[in-house]
Length: 136
Image (tube, rainbow, N blue to C red; front, top):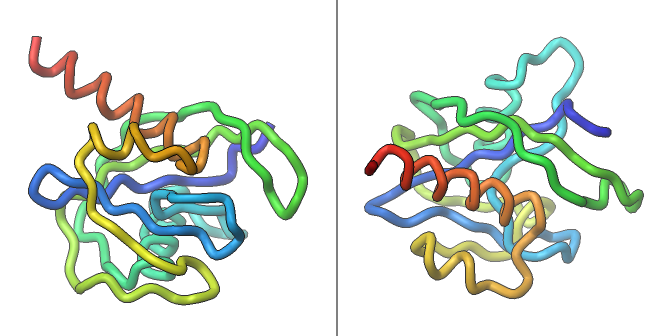
């Protein structure tokens, strides 16, 4: 079990930001491994900046998800803390070591992407479920 990691759902006008991972694991949210002496929120902010060039102003914790993943080539079940980011500054500027491409997609469109990174799929399912509960 790997829990020292994060995922960030960036929202803009009812769309979410996805990047195509440079490691070939598909379309993904920002996120990654926690570094020593770093809390999870700081990790999420750092990963968002490293992968997409955006600076989070505010992150809302959504909770943990559980998904299969490859971590440095090793299959693991990861349990990232998922954050929602509606407030940020900057424009998307990817680092080629992290992401090769990006797109803004609706939640419905994201669910149809065949090569969606498994932790991203689970994080977006959890977010969609939260939206449904809030609307009740």
